[in-house]
Length: 321
Image 1: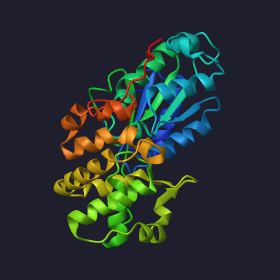
Image 2: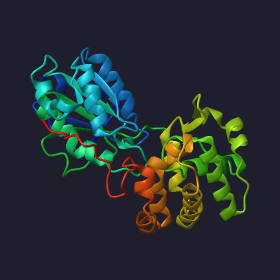
Image 3: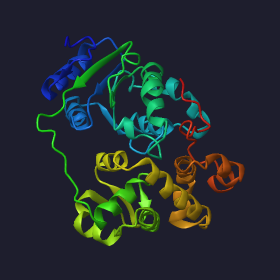
Image 4: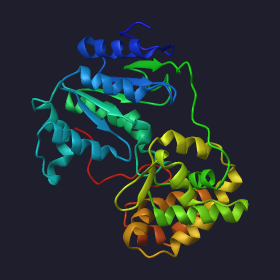
């Protein structure tokens, strides 16, 4: 691959890093993409790029919206922009010393509050270009797959799969079924009460025990539990693998059970926070979105914070310069 032209051919990590560094120095395109399989080490390459470019700003898009990233870029640029002027973020950036800097966005494919959010597509296809042009900066983003149509006017580096390609295999049993239940949560972080109810929903359909305590004991290295007892996978690829290997009828049955439970939960505490972003997406998986929407619960409970299955939530501010 010529280092100053895009190609769908894949390259090893060292060549990818060298190509991106050269693009930073002399590339004409404002946006670069680092693509490749989920196990290709994309994030690690971009972390090394951040170390190599001293004034680069690193943004982790996991669980974030485009508006969240705008706020972080403004903060990194030292710009104290009041909310009423936030729509003019592009003007503020391009007229600041930050103009010409490098912004590195990792985990773009995990953007949005929920696992099925369209925020990742919005961030990669629209926002990266808007940020680069409006703020007069260079932007490099991490993406899942090479997209010829989206690569127009972008510098694209496609990583090879690792030679070993080995991933951790989980033995069947109550602990693994509990992990599968957690993976079926539509919000990437879930309170223990939500995880427990998802295991009950899975058990009721499969007839097999699913044990949260066993999962925490035997697979605790796969999980991260914060001080407020919210749980998430340390590596989202494990959740993605478990979701892919769960039969469609199981997914629908679990979500049918879970949506009924969610709708009867009080709009308070950790469960209420989960409801804000999770109810709509679980309703989609259960095939009950229209009925839940007609009931008014998405509006009454969500308060505008839920993510539509047709696309990520939009904040009221514009994302243009």
